[in-house]
Length: 127
Image (tube, rainbow, N blue to C red):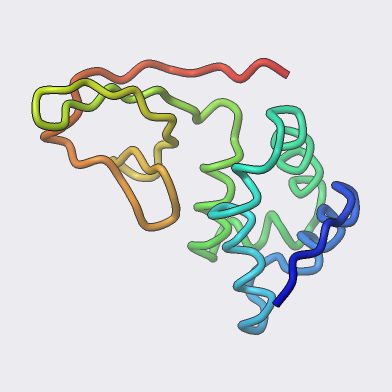
């Protein structure tokens, strides 16, 4: 299948229509907001979509119950961004992460194991 480019505001409207719980196709798009599209957005776009969705009544309800919404919220929250220094085989690497529960995640299902973490510092995005 081909890729299509859509405007940021179209993406935001689509995100509103896909707030969990939704059927599987919409759920996949919602997860891709965190897995794929987060990496394609600027810091300003990330903040904007985060603030936009919080104004939606369904988002608040979904945030109380739905794991996917909690992960999205943690990933896009500008106050929940970190730089984690991890040591892999004697080499330190700085990794952008978000905190979810007690772990530092880099994606929906990928976190940095505690035994590799050397240092964690708060990261404040510049918009």
